[in-house]
Image (cartoon, rainbow, N blue to C red):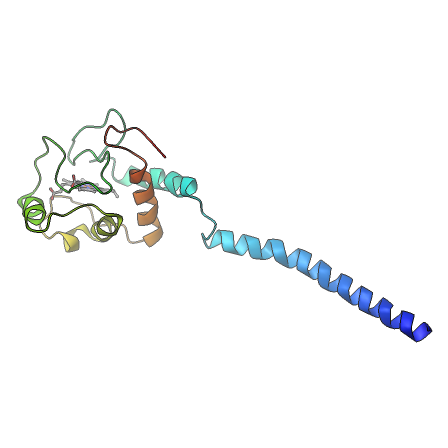
Length: 155
Ligand code: HEC
C-alpha cells in the first residue's frame, strides 16, 4: 500500500512538473509565432503599410484629397487597370504594356512591380529601386487595398 501511494505521489509530482513546464512553454511558443508574423492581422498589416507608404509619398498620394503628383494617385489601385488615372502622363512603356497585355494591378502584379519596378516594366518613369522585403510589399498592398477609387478607407 505504501509503495502504491509512493508511486502515485511520484507520478503526481512528475505530472505537476510537466504541467508547470507546459505553462512556461506555451506562452513562449505563442510569442515566437507572433514574432514570425503568423498571427499578424490585416489591420496590423495595413498599419505597417501606412508607415512604408512614407517611401512613396514624395510621388504618390492616397485618400480623399489625393491627386496626381510626380506619380499617379493610387486610390483604388488594387485590381484596377494599370495606367488609368485620369490626366496622368504615363510612360510610353506603361501605355504599351497596358495595350499589349491589358495589365491589371492584381496583388500578384503589384508585388512583382514593387519588388523591382525596372525589371517588371523596363523604361518605367517610376524612379524607385523597389521594396526588397516580401513582408513590406504585402503590407503596402494591404494598405493600398483599403482605399476605394474615391480614396475612402473601406476596410
Ligand atoms: C520618385 C517618384 C516615385 C516613387 C518614390 C514611387 N513611385 Fe510609383 N510611380 C511613379 C511614377 C512616375 C509612375 C508612373 C510610371 C510610368 O508611367 O511608367 C508610378 C506608377 C506607380 C504605380 C502604377 C499606377 C497606375 O496608375 O498604373 C503604382 C501601383 C505605384 N507607382 C506604386 C508605388 C508605391 C507603392 C511606391 C512606394 C513603395 C511608389 N510607387 C514609389 C513615381 C514614383
